[in-house]
Image 1: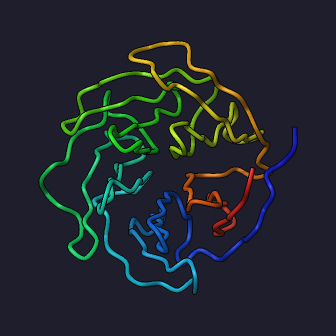
Image 2 (image 1 turned 180 degrees about the horizontal axis):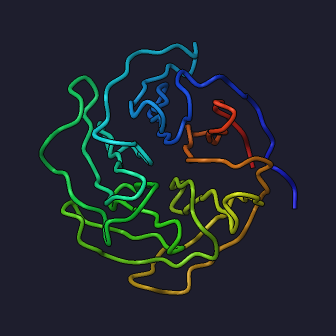
Length: 217
């Protein structure tokens, strides 16, 4: 299996970059160490702004003109929060993730999806957090983005030692726990966290190196 093709490797504006979401020319990054959300201009790689997150921002995704961010303590329940650029995190519309667990988010234009790393599944939820469907996957999930109706995931079976992969999951038309088609399409040569897509390139974090990486598959 071929490795991903790295295009850019850039310094993170804060240590331990954990979550990523791409919105046009902006890359949103959440830091595990500072527990803050950062707005990065992709063209100039400059910081436009930053704000405190409710807790550690494990995962994020763009939903229209807003973000959804899943946050919580390492050993506590995880909650999905609504973030409005220019206004910050909103107290309303917060809900607990199913089973109190989840680390990455994805949005397909209609449904919000929460990945549960150790349960090896993706859970679709409504605006109140009620489960709509569940998609089983073959590996633990540490990054998620929806591209052209398919899930692209960063996955691993061994968090400490790897290997790590980009796994593509096609679950279109599925309405419950159905046999989705999953395929490992590329190897990732470092312990990646998060996954975003800007229309041309994927982005992920090399968290322990404090770097953000753009790549193609």
